[in-house]
Image 1: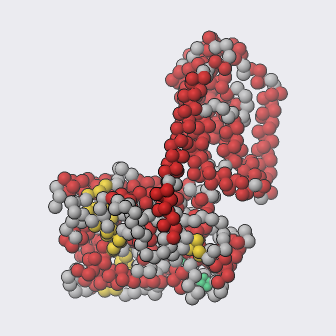
Image 2: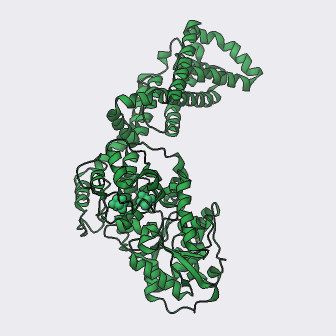
Image 3: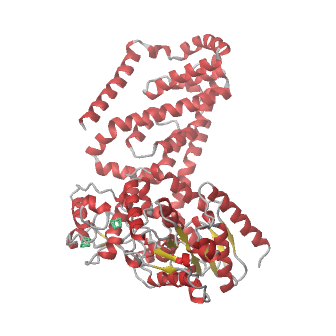
Length: 638
Ligand code: SF4
Ligand code: SF4
């Protein structure tokens, strides 16, 4: 800590010395309109002889002036227009100014954010909350409307938790029109008598309108969401902690679930989470956990930090070191707790608090969030809904990418049972849910849910445990059924168990509370010639494969610990599972895995471990081809 403070002091001193030298040597007197005009000819000559060096030198000076918040940036913009011309000048100034602004913002954050946070934690938390919600819009407006000085914006944003990446691109976009105006004015530098001429009142007004547009649009959206009809809906769903379905308000509207209540620790026993169950408050956990250690002996994360009761008590006292993003959200602790407590729910709640207050670094999760975004994008999403269709197969993101052939086979098998079956290619947004981005998750999942309902869909068949859990927990009146259950109920007798048929089975942890589904999978496995020997931790007490909660992206050691436990329990037998994520993770941990979809498509190949399984980036190509296949089918129904 002391060495960090020394580093900060040294950096602050260096910045102050550089800024002081600028004024000490009267450099600011070189940055006036007259002086700039005087340099124009020399600069043009230099640019004519050595264009790249001239651009680099200009960008260097510009960066230094703007990053140190020194006066003269606008005049340098004019000089760029005069020397480089409008196009090159705009490109150079746009990048130089954005990089400089981001540097200034980062400097301010590094030097002062901790200080401000220490003194005004609540105020900063509120600001961060607003920034997480609408920060990009605000920044865009401020950049476009040249009322607040450029350097003030950089510094203020530096105190917030806005990601630098967002700051960079919003700044570049928002400053582009103003940059163009300056550079363009610079191309006629000789005629300018003052910088005040550059922005006419009409131009200022146009910029102001342009800048306010996204904010106004955002406000209208919020107003719409809070309109009476929408409010009633939310109220219903908040009460919808009730287990009975919420009455329909109109034939085209499916009851939607409420976003999590992200209030700070309360005296209430449960925080509502929109699932009808609620998650335990820190007080409930701290007071009712007997510290028996039944859960913490099984979980490496808890072994590190103590029992859930100890963690909750420390958290209430502001002293916990337990990172909720290191919990796999596997809910094994819930399954084994004699007091019926739900520590996993508590850690999810902590994730939501961190996300809501923009207190965690999203960068490690970019791959998974990109994966999620693409899954719901126009590029990969698709639907095929035959007439009279009220049931769809929702294969999720992983299966069509890793096993397109087996996924298609599964669809055809289901179609034999439900002739008017449709298919939806989309993402259930479980990654955002598990990262605690509840607002984002709710918005996106509700949109999907509404869309399905409006298209007349009342039942969703899934093959992915995560999709199952999301639809079950948040799907309202949309009924969810596992494809495996449907098939197990109808599948005929299979072949005799063969010599290479001895396997063990890994139940995915999102389905630990679904005994009927677990039984259905075992029936299907037996019908397809497999002889199952159960592992020690199975069904309701199954272990996480290691992929849960995206822990591997921040604590690979904890993720690997789960995989190692599984490997030990498998005792060298191939592992049958019904989750593409588990199959991939356990395989990377050194186990031979079989996915149930592969077993159904080609039992012989699956049993001998030869089922084709694609990996990234091939999975993306497979999903596109799968979508084309579906579209082709759309044109030729049946
Ligand atoms: S990793 Fe699983 S067992 Fe451990 S605390 Fe989290 S939910 Fe509970
Ligand atoms: S099993 Fe339950 S009571 Fe025991 S330490 Fe874990 S949470 Fe506490």
